Image (cartoon, rainbow, N blue to C red):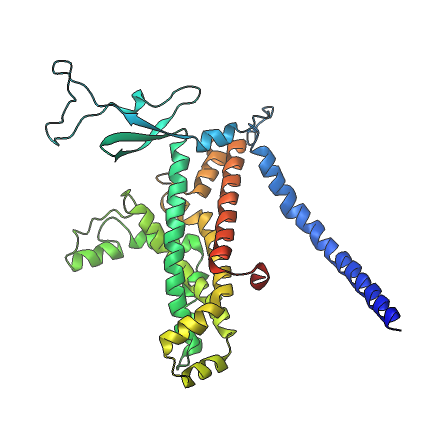
Length: 362
């Protein structure tokens, strides 16, 4: 009887497994059609010279697009030598050594490298060159924007979530009100911030800075290369912190109150309760929130496009420029692949750092 029962259970399990596969098959087919196939097409197109909306014949060019985007080199800049004294030339105003122009040391064949940045190391001057300076700059802008904005949104969102998770009068109204910035359409919020960041006293921030004597009221937030990126961070943090708070609040709601009551009986204060109960149990929700926000931040487009145009690129706006402006579909596809790889890397890193199993975040 026991063998029959075991064989019966085994056959039932097999039937259930086959049924599960049949039920999953339509979803897998849809996923294959709308996700895997287009992604495969992007990967393939990235190895070609395909032009967007063009009758030009497409050719397979291998890794040329990736070499154009990602090729960098570092070259030492030799000092300019005075022909009379045979000594390095010293600038009279700054008192520093004058070095050769980067164009004289950067390679031109088989592809031309342009100057990206100069830096000093152990008394020598170097130049960092790239075949596509704009894309390297776009990667730098996007990574700085992502790390800064996501960190601030996590910190502020966690604070907001802890506040609205506590019991106080007007808790429901507060929870609703905190979602207003997130509910505003991104283009609309970008235009609002464009007015507030205006480079004269018609803008809110310049008016405040002038009123408190901190500036002359003519700070060009959206025109200054040093301020543009931080202005984008401020816009994104204002709009997206409520979304982060909402995800973390959902995680806080799953933590049983009995744990806090037991900790309080044992003499644990609020800080100890946070680090021994709240933070460990909030890790799965935090991982989901970080992955979602990082994914969005790495492919940020609308804020950069509306407020900065082509003055500074994110990876997504540079992708748009290559596809629509230059109609270079092969190069744009390669940019898309790079963005995909970076996002995938960030997602894996978050899961590893937070020690969260994939089953927990599902």
